[in-house]
Image (spheres, rainbow, N blue to C red):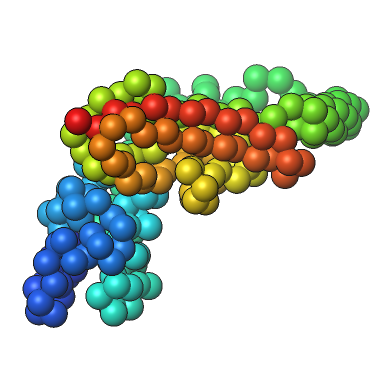
Length: 211
């Protein structure tokens, strides 16, 4: 059975596209497109980004992205590992450490409910008062490069929005975000702004020099 990379590459070649055409049309970096066609997904920022790139690539070629992603999921599916214990060793582990009476069970439920309630409102209060956290892993400040395009990677609150040089970036459910910025010769400023649902903002500016 053909892999996702083989399907995309064969379709691209049959339609006369080069990887440069795909890069321009999808804004996916050339090295990531090459990794996808080689089914070398560890070279991509993460499996979530790989899924998004594959979807955009397939749609650009006019393929059914749902079918391609189904192949992708089967191809990248990890088989969980399990360990087995001999029956004689496993039996003691199945014995309850603490016997629960109805009274103890009810007490645990009530304590758990109150704890969750207090934690939830405590977190909401902090979110109202504080700007969202913002960590920028790339680029580093005062970076000097010869590249004309640079990756912007970082993490913030999953509910926050991220703007990179005036353009909205995709924020995943775990708060990780990724974008790319076009650079020009000289000193470039990369401004990353995270805004919470309550309009609290955190801003980080990176300076990148292009030789």
